[in-house]
Length: 52
Image (cartoon, rainbow, N blue to C red; front, side, top):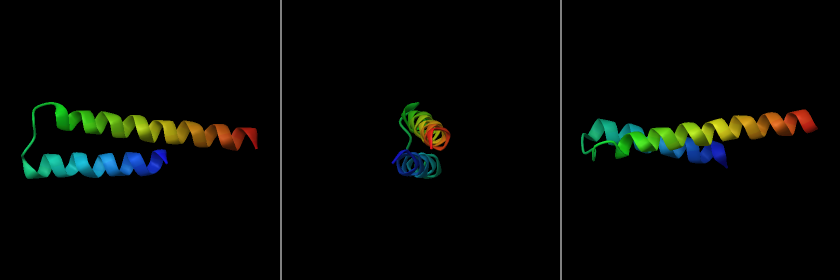
């Protein structure tokens, strides 16, 4: 689930940068949220592998 959220947010961030219709720092918040989602995906995957 975190991987999907992270990828979607990264795509939206990229689209926001390429279209040029950015609203200040809001487009960079998408990047921040995407990085957090991907980090959570890596951490939760590591915990599952360690507990198995």
